[in-house]
Image (cartoon, rainbow, N blue to C red; front, side, top):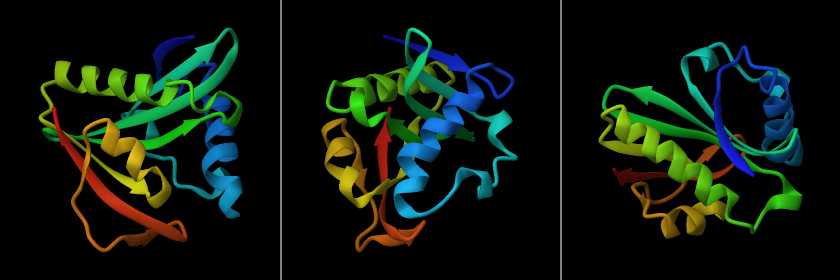
Length: 142
């Protein structure tokens, strides 16, 4: 397994969209084709790949000195193997190299523990609704 960075012109991008759709959208009755993806060329896409298969993805959106972690997804069959933590570490390392000071995100309620183990803290209480489920804003100084 390796972590790579891609852009939206990569051969990997359609496969990335499929993984995000399968893990993040379909389970809640949504379809990634209905998402506004127009800003994605301006964002940094990190993939975990195993041979020719994408097993994880996370996206970094740079907003001044703050990065926004978005669209974290690991294929169901690959969950629990540390892939998500490795993706986040790659994103944070890149963000530090770019001079960013902090990473923020909107974490789904069931993923809060995962992000807390990686050093993120909740900044919103109570949770807010996004894509039909509870989320918390979370942040980490890097």
